[in-house]
Length: 135
Picture 1 (cartoon, rainbow, N blue to C red):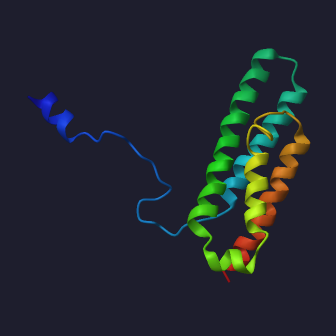
Picture 2 (cartoon, rainbow, N blue to C red; picture 1 turned 180 degrees about the vertical axis):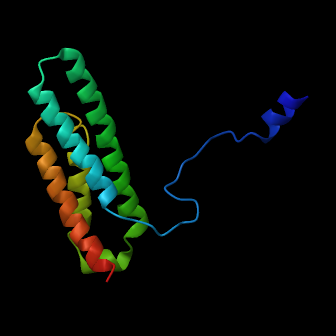
């Protein structure tokens, strides 16, 4: 009987969100911390000759790259509003470039530290605009 009741009230699909309220707590630092981790994994990968260690470094780098994209998307889709995009017309391009740098064509697809540095630079540009909108 309990199993039947559980099946009836259990949601068919679990969904996830940045915040259930929405909380209004946004900060590009979340994306930057993950991007710094991506860069560190790349550096550790390059410095190691241990294949098992290198495999773990790649796995962690790819996981962190996905988190970078997530945190950027939250800012892009939840925090920034039409008036921000009007005031900063380059914002869409910055987000597009940053998320691509965190994707398969960027940090997920390479171990080159220069790619992580470009990603960090784009996040810094986004952060500058973010903090200007908070004034």
